Length: 280
Image 1 (tube, rainbow, N blue to C red):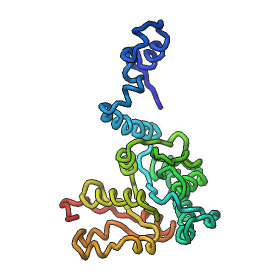
Image 2 (cartoon, rainbow, N blue to C red):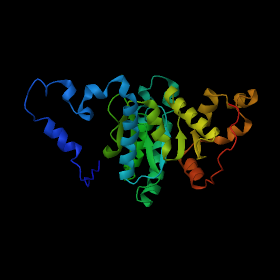
Image 3 (cartoon, helix red, strand yellow):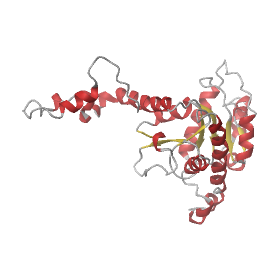
Image 4 (cartoon, helix red, strand yellow):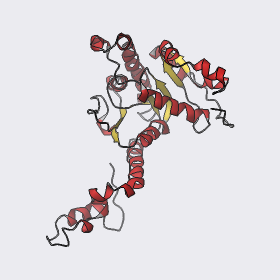
């Protein structure tokens, strides 16, 4: 992280290092003597949650700014979807069949990253959740195209290290789901949702809700795999019931291939944001 020390005041790094070499006395060994920002026990207190939330918002924001990243192509999708080479290890036949979307995500990321390179890697940067499955495919495609990509990981009891294709300097780890989802959407130039489970649906519906209610600008919102999405969600039933408006079905498009998705993004004409919050 860039550290511009142009202030006339003594910087925090120096004081932190100095404080580690003071004489050992009962006073200096007391937890109360620790510098607040260097005191883990203090920072982990429940009362400091607002500070930790702000830090988790600021750290990725500052680093992405320092890398001059202005827009992203967000890939949501299941961690359990195997690559075609590993589809025989899938726990269900459906997962094995969905392995084709690993290659579609990989190819799509390659196409977007080639476009990103034309902007000096400022625009159209692939952003995933940093994990396996579809996320790995997205980061892998960007890596193979010679570009950078972002990984926004989350600490989970069973979580492993980020996949090996995330650009190391753009690999982030989060404690708060809410802040992580903000960073997914803050720079989103397009949102691409591949087959997945609860996590994928959570991310998808939150983003759709923000667009539906006018809290986020319209961007290409692409659901990869019409057959999958129409099987697991009865979109028409929601509109027929009146729990969403018929025009809400226009907030997203079904696509089945990387090339088709790239063409939608290439030919996208922004629609105006919604002025009236529809019924949900």
